[in-house]
Structures are given as C-alpha cells and as structure tokens.
Image (cartoon, rainbow, N blue to C red; front, side, top):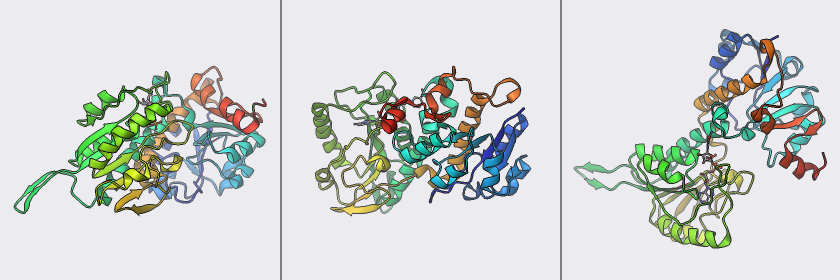
Length: 380
Ligand code: NAD
C-alpha cells in the first residue's frame, strides 16, 4: 500500500511557498504514492492546480476532505489552531513547527493525537543533507538578503571605470558565515562588492576565503561539538564588539545572519555603533525574526536611524517562492523516503536517527525532550 500524501494550502499571511511542487508530485506518483492537493496550494509559487493534475496529483474539494483522506500531510508553516482542529488522530504531519517557540501549535498537535515531524529538527548529518530545509531555505535567504541590501544601498556594488570617473566598489560586511551568510557572500561578490565576513566558528574561515572574501579575525572559537555556535562569555562578547565596531564603521553595507539555535539571536551591533556608521550605510538584519543582530532592528520594518537604513525582513525565503518551494519540496520528498516500510506503505521506524530526532508529537505526547521540558515542565 503506497502512502496517501496531502499537500495543504498555506494560510499564514505572506507565506507564498508550497510544500510540494508538481515536479516532485510526479516523482512521488511514479514511486506509487497517491498525492492529494488542496486547490490553490501552489498558486503563490506559480504552480497551478492544473499542473498538479498533470503531474498525477488529485485535487480534493477542500481542506476538510484533504485532512480526512491524507495519511501524511505536508506543509511549510506550522498549522493554525483552525487547521489543527481538522486533523484526525494518527495523521502524520511534516513541516516547520518552530519547536523552540511554537507552543500553541505543538500543544494542539499533541492533544489531537497527531504524529508531527519538524523540518527544523532534522539533524545536520551527512545522510540528512538532502532533507535539510534549514540549509535549502538559508541558501535562498542569503541570496535574497544580498539583493535586498544592494537595492537599499545608495551606491554601486561593483567598481566601474567610466568616462564620468572611476567608481570604487562598495564595502560589504557579512556577520555570521553559516549557510545564509556564505550565500550572501557569494552573491555580493558576484555583484562586485569587496566583502569581509566574520563568524565565531573558526571553521568558517576557510569557507569565507574560498568565496573570495576576507575573514575578520577575532581570537576566539565558539564552535560546539554539533557544529553550531555557542553563546559567548561576557569577556568574549566585549572583544568581539571592539573588533566589529571598527569594521562596521568602514562598511557601506552590513548583512547580519548570526543565530544560535533555540535562542535569541546574538546582538552584534549596538545602537551607538549604528550612530557612527557612514551616512547612507545599510544594515540588512536577516536575524530579525529571532530578535535581530542589531539593537535597532524592528522585525518586518525598514527604518532610518541616524542616516543609516536598517531593514529586518521576515520570512525571506518566501520572497523567492519558486525556488524556495522547489528546494523545500525536494527536502520533503527525501524525508518522505524515511516514512516508508515494505512496499512503500507508511511505517515509522523509530530506530532511524533522523525520525527519532525530528519527531515532536506522537500518540498524544511530546517526544522532543527540550520542547516537552519547556511546555510540560519535564512531565512525560
Ligand atoms: P545558524 O543559522 O544557526 O547560524 C548562522 C551563523 O551564525 C553560524 O555560522 C554561527 O556560527 C554564526 N554565529 C552565531 N553566533 C555568532 C556571533 N556571536 N558572531 C558571529 N557569528 C555568529 O547556522 P547554519 O547556517 O544553520 O549552520 C550552522 C552550522 O551547521 C555550520 O557549521 C554549517 O556549516 C553546518 N551545517 C552542516 C550541514 C551538514 O553537515 N549536513 C548542513 C548545513 C549546515
């Protein structure tokens, strides 16, 4: 028995992505699965209902029908309370669930008896690379951040030699050189800027330099065994601030991408530093949704602070819905491969490290330890 997969239409305002694009639907159908599609699911990503039908999907009447028939429901954004109310016991949900802060949805999924998997919790191991949505969407966000910053910048990025004089290239500083930061480096370099970058993980240096940017050296290494950054000590923060302040004041554009999983983003740019930046400088804060790397950032807003433009865009991957959806869809397809047993039927193998790490709710309980601890205070 193949799996009956349902594609839900996103309802969160501003979300333009879809969890499965028609190309991926065709692959799943070829593997023998049945794909049900809520009408209009892909419209904001320019994937028309007709394309889903041509790919072998079946349009259902509405969300109620989708939730009744699907065994596995795939989504981008966490479900709303109204959506959760339509889910039935035993449904498997795969999508972003914001395990560090999405308490209402997680409680709802637990109480409804839904088995939910969070794409954010897929471990960063080699076997899981093809289902790593944080990386695929980080790539999109980093690229788009570079373009948004270039658009706000009142000067050219490249060096130009013209009859009207020689233009010096813009100086771009990228803070945080993870997946998004590296893509922002690559994109601003392609636009011709002179790029410097900084990260607390020493391993980032080689990657930054391989993209033709200069690595800003602060004598510290805050990489944990899992490959993520840890929070800095007060003394380390102090040293970091001094070095960064100098580089920030020389930059025409600063793109910040620094994050610490499950925590508020580290503050790297104080209001006083913004106030001594070059007039016309731009700060593009990609960490706006998790608190911001700059003290004056307001999520979703573009403000002027002492002649500096500070923009904290939210849900940046959704601004490039075609490729963000295509990449996310591939991640979902690969994740689906873990949900199958004999003959392609739905089967959850809890011995699988990826499933065991990414499950949030199952059979009326919260399985992800840190989330359970936060929501239920350690009650099992
Ligand atoms: P992230 O979004 O959690 O953080 C972005 C960057 O901010 C990270 O590079 C982090 O080191 C940096 N940062 C945190 N605090 C900082 C501070 N105070 N100052 C400056 N920078 C700071 O990270 P991510 O992009 O998701 O990637 C995290 C790590 O996971 C990286 O090492 C990446 O290479 C690795 N990774 C591994 C795999 C894999 O093996 N499958 C896949 C993707 C990413």
